[in-house]
Length: 241
Image 1 (cartoon, rainbow, N blue to C red):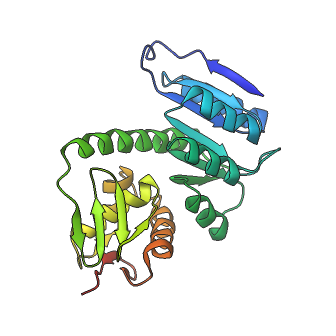
Image 2 (image 1 turned 45 degrees about the horizontal axis):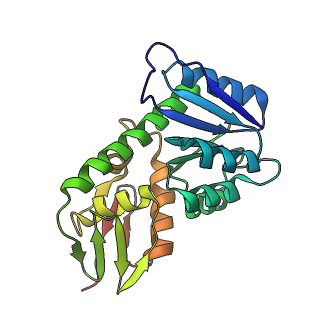
């Protein structure tokens, strides 16, 4: 079942941001819908997994807010199918703060996650950050320099493709941006706060675990030797000689 777009406030209009919320708890879905509509965004709600997949294909949202636990099809499979059809930023909602669940979600294409219960203010802030990053990535791709080679890693910023030792590596948009930020200054330690500001466009340190989770996802895909942890500080990109 799909609930059609909530009426945006006067801030909306032609070209307004379109958000798809896939959430089966009516109270949560309605609260998100009303809060985001107040931002001037067009908001559609799907109440189960299959409806979420259909809505994403039909509506082409700019961002998807996706619950992990859904009837009909879980959020991980919904995310996988949405991303296979058309890349789109996905913010996942999970009732459990379990690192394994988070890493699986990031692995199927989610860009960020939040644990229930959450504040609507932070949800909107994180959604805005995702949208800003997509816009910034589109601008950078138009003026991106030729492929950057660091050790045996090749990063094509124009086409947003990565390979290591000649093997293509599929990264989510967030993973790609994180890799570019780290690889731009090899062997330089970047704090979690700096990475949050540059990659996620956050101005506070409330999401440092998000950085840690994405680094683990990068290591799983590219190899554990590429990113060094500096305990209590942050991370450094260590290319192979």
